Image 1 (cartoon, helix red, strand yellow):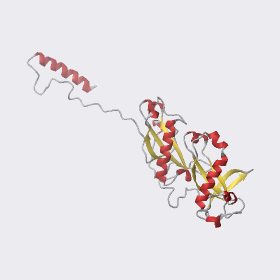
Image 2 (cartoon, rainbow, N blue to C red; image 1 turned 45 degrees about the vertical axis):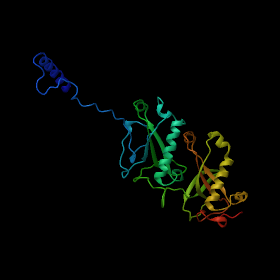
Image 3 (spheres, rainbow, N blue to C red; image 1 turned 180 degrees about the horizontal axis):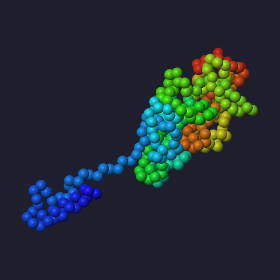
Image 4 (cartoon, one colour; image 1 turned 30 degrees about the vertical axis):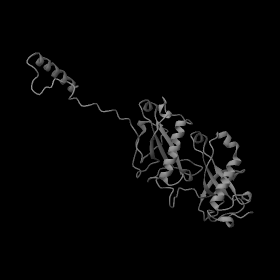
Length: 296
């Protein structure tokens, strides 16, 4: 306000001067050329490489309180990207199941898996894609955030406090990686997969992620035999045994599929496990060959 008032006063003095004998020394008769250019408005964009005490489903600025990952936290933002194309031209943020949300999900899966050193679905890592709030979107925000958390188990997505970044967490010794398990069955249904050491007695072992086809969730559930067969092929490759008709007599399978909402957002990663019901294993079946998985 003071600058504005000074400009008015200066303008009045200039007008009087012009009515007399010309402009005073040092006055160039241009009232606007010495004003600084206005600073462009800066749209808020969250940071990657920071951590958070609580998860967000929507990226409200009021709930954005990042901390260092060496501090106690639950969530880590591993990547921040930008939506483009038709998804960015919408009047509101992309809803669940939309092409825009699927694009963000795919990008986050790729970036997070690169950061942790393997497909993040091969270990105890949950992923949430966070989009801007509707007011922020209306103001021009087009970012998406890839938030990762350490989950309790393959059956329990509860998130506890931790310290330290999850980057590289599925490399080397990788304590978060899925390995060997003892399934708890109730009426032929898996109630829980109890993680154990592969040198302890166990009946199941994680063999990899099968990328299911882009079909509806209902159709996927109707074609469980196809998923079983795909996990068998993954088991054959993992254990180095022939992928033929005798595989049914060597080993069974267990698989975990994404939740329906994850499926709608584009996650087609099915977690495959080999399963031996009639005897206990005391070693990993990776590269075990036909001696490790004989025809029975």
